[in-house]
Length: 530
Picture 1: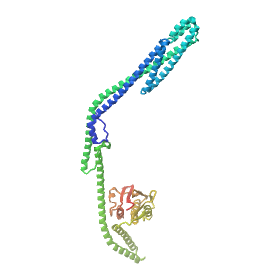
Picture 2: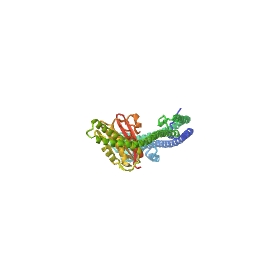
Picture 3: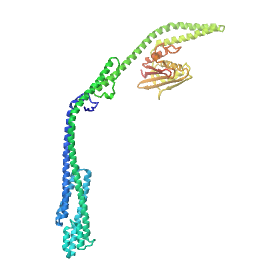
Picture 4: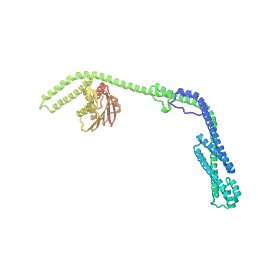
């Protein structure tokens, strides 16, 4: 079975139409080929006629050339005129038919020009010799008969005539007749050689023309023998190829549709180049695109569900935290004031154990007040008061004011070529970076690198904060923004929850990536204008 490679960009409708009409197209191609071939044959036959005419006239030229040398000087004039006439006709053929082979045409023109030049020279030489014979007869009256006999044959046999005159009349080798006859013999030989070249070249042209005609005819025969079987084989092969290609790709698509119904979103398990660009290929591409969109929507729904759960958690915890903080705040203040009064009253007379107990009460009270303060901050969650904030300057200032020890930390801030200004609440943004920088420094107790970068693009600002600390366990990454979740021994678990709330109220997003032992990176994306 023979197959044709069908253009994959062709539509299925066109492929089906091609399957039905390809056989008729082959017949049309054959008919067109035969028509063109017929025109080519006619052209080659005309060319053959020209070469045949040229060959015949070349032979006629040689015949009249031969007659010119055979006949008497009086008869030779007629043959000379015929030679010039045929030369003119041969030149005319070359001028009228420039489609003859270029190399042969140039050669023929050269031969004809050389032939005409030599023949003209011979004619001139014959006239001089005829006049010389007349003068010689007048000078040698006693040999007039012999000289007359020699004059009758000198054109045909100049060499023998020269020998005859040398022996019979004893003309010296330098005599005008003897030297002229020798020159005529040489010119005759060269003229015959040029004439033979003309005839041989003409015959070669004629032979080449005949071979071309036969070649074109053979090509037509081969085309008929080849294209007619192709007419049947290609049509059947095309229909088989189209049906096989379509059914194979549809089966691939069916298998993927079945998997999609189970909740998976796989792509068609075949290289894209095999999909084709027809309607079936387009269907596969659209389906794969739909699979990608479904997968994205499913991931987006999952993310939104997680965010919704997080928001609900934060709301519930915020309500609880507000109540608890409110109830604890007044007693704590009283305890703190009472402890301060007790410390003053105790004075120096108090025992060391009493001093240590009072100091511990004050320290723990301050710690609990800080936790309550964070709970209130988390619970209040006021809306941002927007101002134009230079984010680079704000981040640099926050790092300088950190309350933790940063001596062993190498801090770098990459802000690009220009400062980034955005609309934000400066106090809340300070709280964001205080928490992020503090967490990063505390994650590197032995020192390390803290790198921050700010980039603006397409109306958004992207901020990254990376450290080279101990990192976060994979199973804890999804919980880092939940309230009261912490991996620290003394942490409250509210810092990142507050960060999450602030970024969300600025219509931004925050994401975390971490690997244990290599560090953590927080990425914040916020709009420049709210």
